[in-house]
Length: 168
Image (cartoon, rainbow, N blue to C red; front, side, top):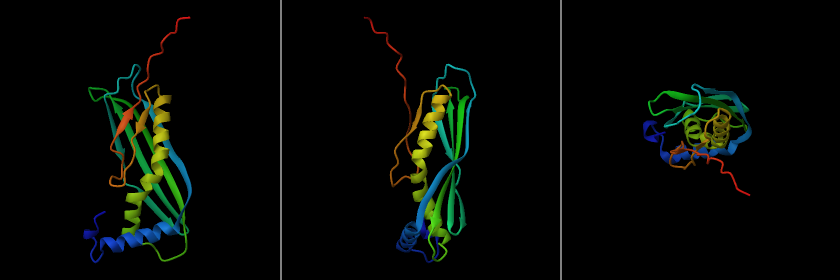
C-alpha cells in the first residue's frame, strides 16, 4: 500500500496505526476452509511451469473477531501449457481483537498486505507439497518469504531420484 495515496496520511502515521493494530491482535486459529486438488492428466507428469494465483484477501471484522481469508491457486503445466494439475487452498486466519477504537481501513489493508501472508505461508507450503505428492506429482515447494516482497518469488519442484538396486 502506498501511503502517498491516502490524503493526510504519512508513512509514519500509518506505521503507528499498523503497530497498534498488531499489538491488539491475537492469533486464535488457522484453518482450511476449502481444499481442492485435481489431476487433469494421466501420468507420467512432465511439469514445465508452475503458476501461482492469489486472490485479494477478504477481511471480516466483528469485534472481538478479526478474520482474514487467503485464497491461493497453483496450476502445474506441461511444456505446451496444457494444465496437468490444479490445487486450490482457502485458509481462514482467525484473530481476536482487543478492545479499542475501530482500526482504520488503511491500517487494516496495510496489516493484511504485509503480515497475513506471513502467517498463512507455512500452511500453504505444507498443503501444496502434500497435495502434489498425493496427486502423484513431484512435490512442489513454495520458496521463502522476504519482508520486501509480500509473496514468495520462487517455487521449486523436488525431483525424485530413481531407486537404485544394491548388490549384495
